Length: 118
Image 1: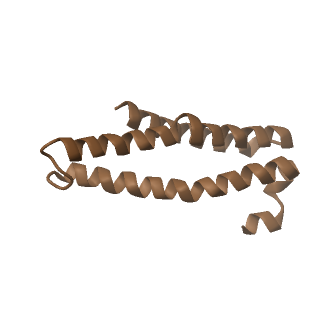
Image 2: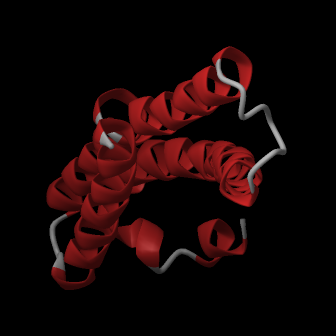
């Protein structure tokens, strides 16, 4: 329960931080919000929560009589955890690039057509 709470709560925190960017006009504040998003995602809440869910799934599957596919909820958990972790890996590289660009050109990164294409 702790791991899934961290994962879902961290995801909600990321969404709230993301929506804070809409009213920002200062490049340093924009860069700070991007760093906060990255910090909550990678080091504090979301990634540890995701791996905690994966670890509990392994414990349920390997050390109990339930196995990997005996109950539909365990199979569903595996599918969700694996897809979410893969999706998170895809977004992680985008997030890192966003931090780098917002640190270099600040708020102009929201309107620069060369950056928006990527």
